[in-house]
Length: 379
Image (cartoon, rainbow, N blue to C red; front, side, top):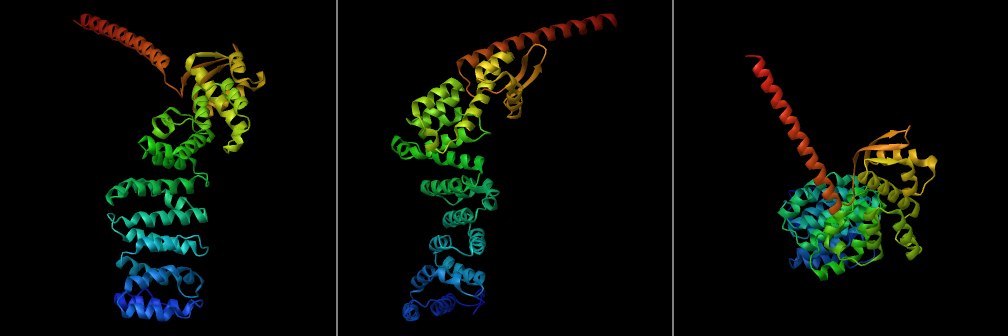
């Protein structure tokens, strides 16, 4: 039996056809057909469709056109406002036909009006299936429109949190670090009160761990603008302070104090040590226009022969721009990134801008004098 995609049948007829088919393939309950028939005779169409949705795994095992079957069930569920129940069933943990189920959910999502709140449930179901088959890229490209339609459909704060969480939970194990952190940040930004922040401690710790573990992430100040992170009193929060300071000695002291905590947090000590050395070198360059090789050796606790390798790495990381003076064994810094911009850095910037302003004023005076001399000479 196939051909459930016809649209010329009435709603009652479509449900009756689906009920008859389901009763034929579900062998565990011989009275199922009678149950369907009794409810249909009493006009309980929505109740029948709810029962059909509960038996959806039976569709996966049938030899019929699964896409047509699911599209037909989707059609009647949409008419009866049972989209949420269907989305939950299609994205269940039952294995098999994940791609087909994704296609059906995707069609349903696109057919729903942008103002329909049920879109959220369908969207979450899509991400669940994407996570199961390891294909987050199928949805990542559409994230740019997410905030817009979440607003249009009047999503609740709980729904938004559920969406942000599922995107993070799927992207994180798939190695999509940037997207993972972005949506974990969005999730944490929805917590405001002290009680809410307390309930988000584990997510705040997770964001810190993901941030310090990402070899391409070197900016940590913005994390403290997130209330659940700012309120933390935890080991990961201590680790965040160490990375903000960019001090290798503080990192070593942290390890001595906390023993094997990094392994428990899923972090690799050698990877973190390499990262904090890069930050230390960047901060060193930010403080000094010229840095000797010996200073680099001392600050990073490395061998003399490794200096140039670390210089290359910090340039590749985009943290500094510099020239190497081999003759004088030093580097000349032209640009550097600074993870923490505190009062001393602001004062340094103020001084530099003041000097720049004076230099510009001097150039302007010289140009004015030259112009006046040209005008006099031309008379």
